[in-house]
Image (cartoon, rainbow over all chains, first blue to last red; front, side):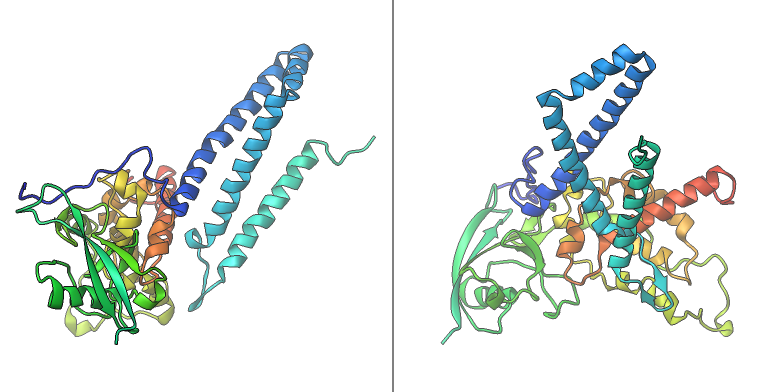
Length: 133
Length: 249
């Protein structure tokens, strides 16, 4: 007996394993590591580009390795998870009130998907994907 | 004849006798219209009067009977036995709080944090009663009404992984109430709350896991209040940075 309130310890490294909701949350948190890694990879590519054709060719060659392709699929999966999770909760963060009513949440989420699509098209356009010949 | 017999596995902790909590089982003959609180009251009245738990209104208004029911924070008075498929229910005190006794938790940390966010209307220009009340349109009320429904049951704190890992975190309900008053057209206290709300242990310790909103028995949606506060606070910070805010940074 100790006569005091009992404090339950939280398993710091495994607290999320017992519940689907918490696992999803942790996957979302971990996704930032993959998105950050991809940003570093792009910076590495820019650095190689600035160092000349030979360095950039070596960089591009490295991207074709099985390990690189596998990592790219992983980064794409986590980026999609992160983006879709965030877009689905945007109506909570940015409610739009019109008079006494709120705009249905799916309009706000859909707006983000449209913006995502348009920005992606723009980046592909300036990247020369749509230029022929 | 009872609707079904349910085995309640209740976490017990009696500070004068126990070094740590332990589970005690009770076989309770439940009626079809019973909620978990009815089953606990049956135990208290007919099986074991030493069992301690908080309750008062029995209609999801007072917020006293928040507890873990099969691992999820919920109000015992709003959780129907018939909706729970299992015949064995595990009942525990709300996680993330010290256990005072059996299902009763120590709420002091929450109360202290609630006081820090000043959850009441603050006026800078107090006018005499003779000038009448501060009027508010239905649209102005709608802006924050959902956040007034919080009953301080602490289910959101029990679900919040950030509060579990960072005890300094002000937490969902207190931050929601700060947002509720910041959104109130009659209130002028946003600046007074800012130091607590916009601190690291305020809104920025929230990782937007949404667990608080998922478990909220009153559909208050604390996660939305915190994210809206993050955006508003960030905009104020940038406005102050470029000298457009006219307020302290």
